[in-house]
Structure formats: C-alpha cells, structure tokens
Length: 390
Image 1 (cartoon, one colour):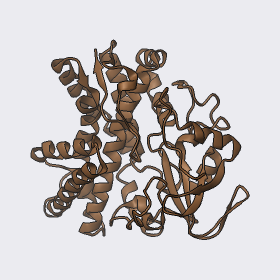
Image 2 (spheres, one colour; image 1 turned 180 degrees about the vertical axis):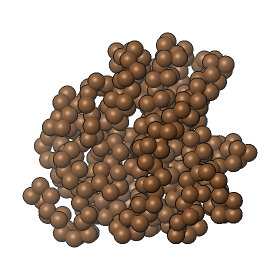
Image 3 (cartoon, one colour; image 1 turned 90 degrees about the horizontal axis):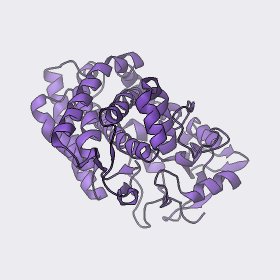
Image 4 (cartoon, one colour; image 1 turned 30 degrees about the vertical axis):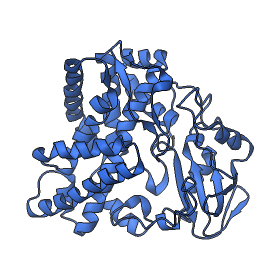
C-alpha cells in the first residue's frame, strides 16, 4: 500500500474504509509506505491486530512511531508527556497503570451509576425545556461525561463551567490547532488542581493519588490523560451511537423496549463503530507475524475498525445487532494498553443511550443523514454536531 485507507464510504459513515475490508480478506498483513518515507506494515484482521497489541516486543512510545496520516516533512513525534500512559512501555507504564487500576475498579465505577442517572436526567430535562431542534453533541453527549470527569478529578464547582467550555472546544474543534489550544488550557488547569489537592485533599481520584509516590508533574499528566480519555471518547460514543441507532430504527426500538439490552447494546456499538479506529506500534526487535518478518524499528498500523468487522470473529459483522455477543471486541483496545476507564465508559453509555431514546421516543435527525458532519481527521472518530428534533 502506498497510502493508508482512511476515507469512509459516503453511503454509510459507520463503516470502515472499503479498502481495509479487501485487505483483511486478501492480505491481512501488508507493507505500507508512509508519507515520511518510512516502510512499515498495515494489519487488518482481528487475530493479528490482537496478537500485536498483546506482544511486549511492540512499543507504544510515540517517539518511535511513524503516523500514516502525517504529511511528509512534519518530523518525528515527541515523546509522551510525563504521566501519559498511552505513550509508555513497561516498566514505567506498569508502575503508573498499577496505581490507576485501583481507582477504576468495576465495583467503584458501578457505584457511580446512581450519579450518572442523576446527571443524565438533568440534561434530559434541560433538552425538554430548550425544545427542538438542538445539537445533541453539545446538549447531551458532551455534558454527561464532562460532569463525571469533573467529579472524579475533584474539579471545584465554581471552576466547572470554564472546564466544560474548554473541554467542549476540544471535542468539537474544527482544526487540530483549536483542539490543541483547548486541551493545553485544560492541562494547565489540571497542573494547578494537583497543587491544590496536595494542600487540601478531597474525595476524588487526584486526591487519592497524592498519597502515592507520583510527582506533581506525573499527577498532572495522569489527570490530563484521564480527561482526554474519559471525555472525548465517551462524548463521541454517545453522539455517534445515537446517530447509528437513528439509522437503524429496529435496533433503536429494541433498546427502548428492553432495559436488559443496554449492556449488550453498548458492547455491540463499541464493536460496530470502533471510534478509536487505528492503533500504532513499533517493533523493538525483529518479530515474525503471520509468516512476515517485521524488523526492529518498523512501525505497524493496526486497523481496529477493520478487525472489529472481521467475519472470522464476528458473523455478519457489518450488521448492527444489539443482541449479538460482542465480547472480545477491540473497541477498548487490548493488552496492557486496554482502556483503563472502560468501566466508567460502560456505565455512562448504558445509562445515557437508553434514557435518551426512552424519554424522546420520536427522536430523529433534524437534517438529512449525509448532512451530519463527521470527524475524519482525528484519531477518535465521531460527529462534529448531531442536529436532532423530537
């Protein structure tokens, strides 16, 4: 391949690029030429993507990676900021991950269900008062995870409006520069918040972590990572998930009629949409994958969206079926970098999606489906807005 396939088919914005499906069936691991001149690899099958994600001989360090969509002449990526687990390998990754795992247990996240239900109801009420039409991304999908991440990090109430404004700017940014500016402001704020938690700890994740051996810089990095990972992804899953359900009215009706379907529905939507669509790893030593020798220093691009549509793992994979057993999907990645906040995301999605379609049984798009603007230039796929009426 001389170019990484990334354009979605116009007829269905939920499907991966058609070229990825063709490669998965014909050459699930193939050579890929990068714009910067690097010669690496592209992996598209479920089994091989999962294999690479689980192999410690492949690194997640940013400075070792070549990105398939970065223009020629951009230069190498910088190392991960201090505290950013996603760009670290063991043992540094192991140390930070162990400290964070205790903060995101299944039990603790489930205890938050009642609070998520309260926040969700508040925003449904606000939608009712505002009346249609409205942008579901701004009115509903963004605020719910924003409130929850504020409470988890211990953001004081009086600071939350500015916090949410910067977060919303980052999620809905029209350009990478706007997004960078918004998240830089949040990172600066979180650094100040860490200092405050050191002096006056409260009942939240950041305060708990001040009792560990993490430095202020590491704490700020961890807080910024949790913000980005817990906000942008969940907001886009709520919005894009709603868009998908509106385009599959039979599945939407099934979710509305059966509360027990919420759990399986979230897993199937995570598989079907795969908003974290592309992973990147770099070989630390020569590694053989499916009979191909990947040499040390070569970057491997992992098409998780194609892997989650692999018929060898999921029968009839291009069909959205909320009754499917989608266990094992790669929507939260796999291996040591599997999403640490996945249980919180599940709680928020299991509450927010059924509550929305139940409160507004006549919810529908306020524009033609092809007029919904999607995010095609981000490592997190989603919508820039979702105009709806009810």
